[in-house]
Amino acid sequence: MARSSQEIIALFDKYVIPNYTRYPVALTHGEGPFVYDAEGNRYIDFFPGWGCNMFGHSPKPVVKALEGQVERLLHVPNSWYMEEQGVWAELLSERSFGGKAFFCNSGAEANEAAIKLARLHTPKGKYKIITFYNSFHGRTMATVTATAQEKYHQGLEPLLPGFTYCKFGDLAGVEAAIDDETAAIMVEPIQGEGGVNMPPDGFLQGLRDLCDKHGLLLIFDEVQTGCGRTGRWFAYQYFGVTPDVMTLAKTICSGVAAGAMLCKQELAPSLRRGMHASTFGGNPVAASAGIATIKMVEEFGYLDMATKMGEHIKARMNEWKKRMDIIADVRGVAGMIGLELKIDGACFVQSCMENKVLINCTHGKVIRLLPAVNTPLDVLDEGLDVLEAALKKGA
Image (cartoon, rainbow, N blue to C red; front, side):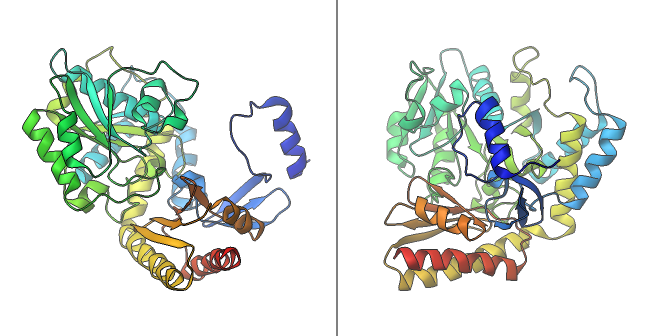
């Protein structure tokens, strides 16, 4: 017998560690831009899967690929070859900078691999990595240290040594922070959790120039921006700056747990045998979902669709900004939009949820939308109408 939301919540209260802040809703199934709770209520999801579900919930081509794969091969370890993983790596390489891939299960693991690669590749004694305030790189001990937000460090000290923090957008500060022990610079091309912060003009190119000048690796954390979210395959293509290393997760498999680190061909031997591994990384199920995701993007023209969707959302929000004093800024690109408020945004998340629209607030005051790029225009406007009404009421 199906449980109610309250019964499911009670189950969690009894058996699940309460390390997440959860809304009092139990979701049971979804399709496209919609998700449903145990009572059958329909929600428009503007933040599906924390940004992982780029095509919304249960996209049919991905589901079909998964169904076929689990009947053939569910899991084998990376001590064997499997065609699906090789094909997936080829597709990612051809659409990026022609590098090689290491597969894992999450963005944190992908960044962990990038950190190891940077230390292994650079000369002995060069181990420091420069990251940026308001960044977010993951929850492992290395990646939480790389995340330059003190709130994520509290209680976990001592942190891993070797990370230097700089202000996002401050090239002079970055150059001043480089010393003889610096190995790499790690940066999100667009800061996601930190507030959908766009890089100032020339900043990413400036980082590239500094890395070339000082012999450092440039690592782009594209966990949130990659695989079509910005209207390009990868955000570095949007900005015209190519990294040495790139990390991916979230949209890479349309919601199936997976991550990847891509690096330039000449760097790949540095992640030598025995130095890093992932038991489930690149397994046939994830690889099949990854292949199907890439095919969906191309077959349905989702890069252009993401761009047009972002333009539509920002146009509406900029109209709101003219009429509502509580709106400070509208920013982002394609399927990654931030609406910065002058007041706390948590109440608007609650209000929208009560009116069956799911959104996110990050960094206290930034309403963050990462909607499915194939959300129909009428559904998009229906959800935006709810958000607009909530903002008007709060203004």
